[in-house]
Image 1 (cartoon, rainbow, N blue to C red):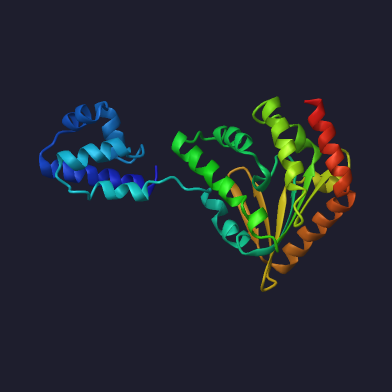
Image 2: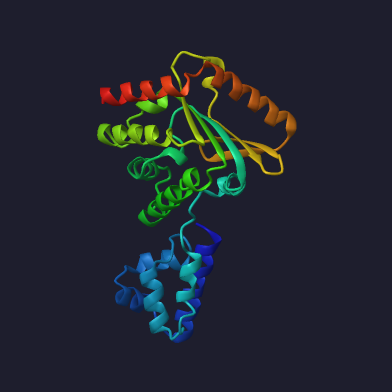
Length: 264
């Protein structure tokens, strides 16, 4: 339940009551069960576009209830990542290490959709599609911001997760190879067994802005932390540097990715 759902649902109830429309009548006209309408009015379920449209007409709201649709659009990114996304959009350099999954900036549409669909708790179809759309739009930075340096170090495990199945994974690996050919993008693979003391601690992203402010972002299930403290950023930068030193060079990494793709 969100405050937005509860507020919009309550507005439906207030307009319905004022117009003398029963919950049963509204449900029948909108083709919803009584309990479904009740859940939407109480904010336990997101008020649907269909219910808002029918309620607006039956209650004579003259578009006032339909205006709620703008505020019910799904968020393109999880709330925990919003500040990070804002800084990333302005960064002049972005270096990252990913332990288990292909990072969003390198994901294909098929891989991204398969991954987002498996979120827990489950997301509704509208939210899934909005997050896929936002992820693909975010990737345009690789070509649009040619002056920004993007460095990716991927653990070998991320190449073998089989997200979306073998065909989707093969397409994903081919996409990484294409991205690695961009002049401002480097892709390196950390073979399994190397630098385990640091590599198994999780993923990290290092950002630097045009003003030379430096940030580090680490993420775990259902949480993310954006660090600006110099000591923390320095420690994570050193950890990333150690991992990167153990990774294959760009050319060797491309060969490694091709080999894994051929095995699929």
